[in-house]
Length: 123
Image (cartoon, rainbow, N blue to C red):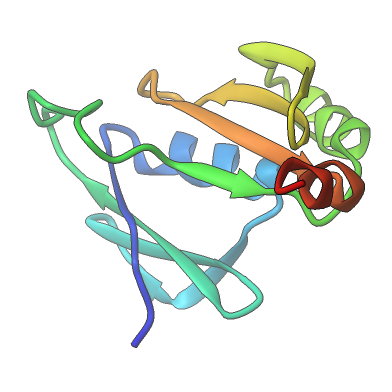
C-alpha cells in the first residue's frame, strides 16, 4: 500500500508549475483538468481541482517533504521559476529546512536531515 496525499488546488496549471519547480515529476497518464499525479521515486502526490478550497485546508495534516538534494539547489530552482521562499534556510534540531507556499497559500516545509544530529538526539 502507498500513501497518496491529496492537495486541493484552485488553479491546476499554477499548482503543477509550483510542484514541478519543487522537483516532483508530472505523470502524464494521470493528468486532466480535475486530477494530476506527480511523483518522486516511488512516492506520489495528487492535485485535485476545487473551484473553492475546503474550509479546513490547514487542518490536522501538514504537507512536508524531505530533501534529496541541498536546499540551496532547491531555492535556486524555485527562484528560476519565479517562486520566492516563504521562509529561507533555518537551522533545526534535525538539520535545516525551508518553507514554501503553494499558489493557494498552503505552507510546505522541506527538510534536509543531518544524520549526525538525529543520531545524537537519542543519546
